Image 1: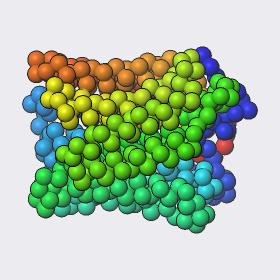
Image 2: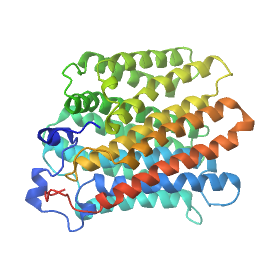
Image 3: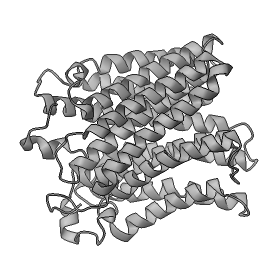
Image 4: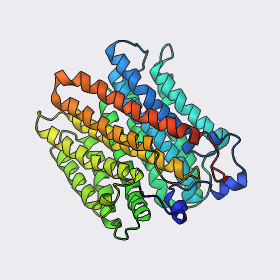
Length: 413
């Protein structure tokens, strides 16, 4: 197994743990509130472990919930705007502190943000007897609150390059708003489009972050100097994906839209060609990120095929992007960031390597279920859900003690 050299540990932990601001203002009383990744990665792990089995029980009819949305849309909404948004929140709250050397939120303000996220999850799931607009307002308020928290240090330090993250949060808010306006009867037929827009924006987020960190992680861990990124190709990929997000929202039925998705897939593969995926096989913290990234061109390619032939279900593409790309990469980043920012060596424990493999397996099983037809759908749905649950349960077993404990090196954060 490849381990990171001690001299590289500070560089490899992205975002960096324990900013100067943390040292000046003092560490939070509780370790869980000392850095943004701590509560949100813990909540994301818990939510991913609990919500999928709950959904399986709901669609089986064993459990009934008074959800604000119907069960299928509730599941889609909560995986995008619940689970994935929690991971993004944890990453950005930590990363922006590193980029600006100013803290985003720690202590009570951080716990307040986490409580707002929890309130959204509870009210979406157990909606009655509250008025629907109350549920919508509570859930919709999290992303603007997060955007304000991360925008303040970015603006104060004139870190204009990373303000793109605020724009991405605004796009996620717009997607969530579409879902709620449809549920409230204001915009009929926009619920599914809002959910798919959310998926597209999450893929864009992954492309932004991957182009910044994947080559660096791989080069620093392996020592292979030929592992580099291409800024020009990176910009092309991100620009093409941004256009695809707009096309997929405004003109999903246009022939140009799936063709443009294929273009993004080709550019994504070309852009990652020198990121050193072939050198990552001995390090789970590396190969999980490269494997997760590969699901993006696969998913976009499957979308294009599904647009031209009924033989391929759009669900295959959706789950390639959601479980394969988003699920795998979020688990990999949560594992890596938590180690780096808790002062630990960047080496994956054996159960975490198993969790990575299980997430990839869940994506394959779920996509295969959609491809095999009605007879195999139910069994593969249950199997994929159980495999996903096992993966995140393993994450919790290993990382919950890390997330609620102080850094092993005694530094703030």
